[in-house]
Amino acid sequence: TSEAFLHAVGSKRQLVWSNMSLFLFSAIYITLNVLLVRYAGAVGLIAANSCSILFLQTVPHSYFRIMHLDISH
Image 1 (cartoon, one colour):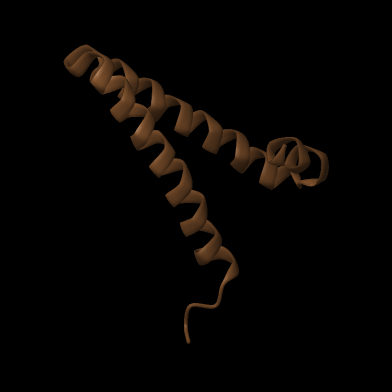
Image 2: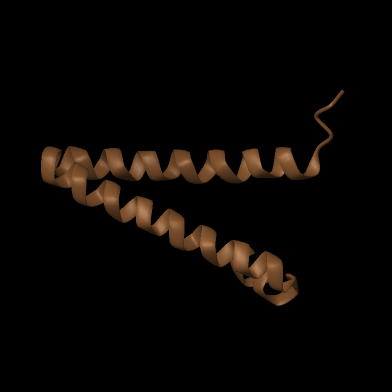
């Protein structure tokens, strides 16, 4: 739903950033899945999903802090 909202109200720059981010995260997720499943089977799949969830929660939070909060104080 947040993706649909962004596409409805976002500027062209925000849409390009969003689409490039989705592409990057998808590529990382697919790579992790292929490598970890190949080397660790079902445990690798769980590890890849865990890494993906952690990454997708950490990166947007860090981006928001950098872009929208005054961290000079």
